Length: 52
Image (cartoon, rainbow, N blue to C red; front, top):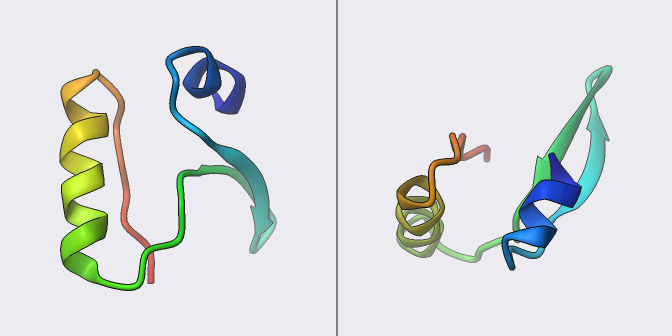
């Protein structure tokens, strides 16, 4: 998934958390900024989960 996101021009890294691997896009200082980026990524056809 991270490679696919990178190919689409979205900077992503792979993180390991609680026994699972995730593609992570950024770390944001505000929930509003995270929601804005999530909307942009969703509009490109990807599913996004915001985690705290």
